[in-house]
Every structure is written in C-alpha cells, then in structure tokens.
Amino acid sequence: MPKTRMIKMEGAMNFRDLGGIQLKGNSLTRNGVLFRSDGLSRLTVRDLKKFKSLKINSVLDLRHSEEIAKAPDKLPRDMTVQSINCGFYAKGTMKLFQAVNSGKADVRESKSLMRQVYAKMPIEHIEEIQKIIRYVLQSEKTPCLIHCMSGKDRTGLIIAIILKAIGAPMPAIISDYEMSNGEYQTVDVFDEGAQKESITAVMAADPSYLLASFAAIEKVYGSFDNYITKALMLTDSELNQLSHVLSE
Image (cartoon, one colour):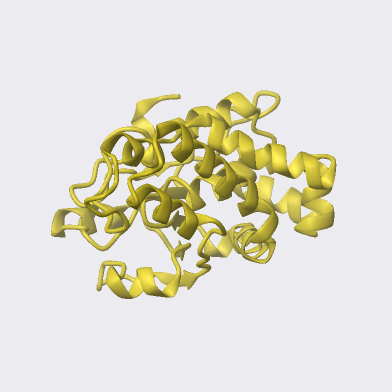
C-alpha cells in the first residue's frame, strides 16, 4: 500500500486518502473522494490550510456526544463543511477500559477484550453503519472524511465494510487497516493503573481485531453479502452507486 496515501498533519497522526486501493479486477478506489483520520480537535493553522486544499465537503464524526464535547472538531472557518454526527460508543468498550485501568488485564487479556469489542460492533451498531454508508454513496456529499477519536477502531471497521462492499479483497483491507499503526494522539481513557503494554495492545491496529468483526458477521448472517442485504438493507442500486462514487 503506497505510503503517499498518508497526509501529513501536525495535529492529526492518522489522516489518509482512501484512493489507490486495488479492487477486484483492474479497478482502484478513487483519489480525493473518501478520507479517514483520527481526531480533528488539534489541527493547526497549517493543517487547516491543507484540509481546505483537499476540498472536503462532509465530515462524519463517529464519536459519541461526550467525546465531541471534550474535543470538538476544528475545521476551516472560511469554507463550508457539513458536519454529520454518526457517533456510537462501541459495546464492550467500557468493560475493556475498566479492565485495562485496573492493571489486571495483561496484553493477552487486553487483546481478547479488543476482539470482543470488534465482534460486537458490526452486529450492535447496524443503524449507524447503514446511515454512514448511505451518506457516503451520495456523490454530492463527497469528498468525505470519516473519523473518530483515534481513527482506528470505529473508523477502521466502517472503512473496512465500505471497502469490502465495493469489492476490495481482504488483504488490501487489512493492509489499509494496519496503516493506523505507529504514533497516535494522546487519549484520556487510560489512567496510571494501566499496564503500558496493555495500552499499546489496545491502541494497535491488530489484524485479529478486524478479522473478529468479519468472523462475527459470518457467524450471525452466514456471509458478508447477507449482512449487506439483510442487516444493512442496502439495495443493488445503492451498492452500484457506492462503487460508482468510490471506484474508478
């Protein structure tokens, strides 16, 4: 996966263009149409100029209201950007943070709890996922940016589902997901009782986490195609439109 998809920001460490990803056949995802990132509350003046140059029309914020209140998005004032709140608090996250902060959850337990959270997300948050995809497939809403707090978990799952829906093979999806590894912004969900190694495990873009989501989809719905049509209730017309918007 070309590193050129990464967009260097001073106040965001996980900002990238979803263009250039190989799909089935010879097609690629379009450049400059869909972006993903971590939090936008720390964007600098220089970042805001770069943001403006990307001509982003819509920002889909996957954080819940408490997260937004603590760190509201900082967006250019001299351009119109539609800000859409599609936030959700992933089921099982509170249990995960409590276990890690207690100091009792080692790396192995932390990873197990992360896989449990990921397994619940596509099943417990169908309404939010459906809303996001239906928004993205509207060409007039793009270019579009999807983000959460770290741009890895909620954003990672949503992007993975979108990519798979338009025909990206799993290795390409995992490759994009793993690009979220590396430096990350400081988050305020861990306290002094947490083991450093456990925090690192939680903040990692571990492929086993994302694979847990798709395994849960297969278990509950039998196949990803069934999930798309029976859970998210996306029609063939909507899927074709999504592909038209996002792929070359």
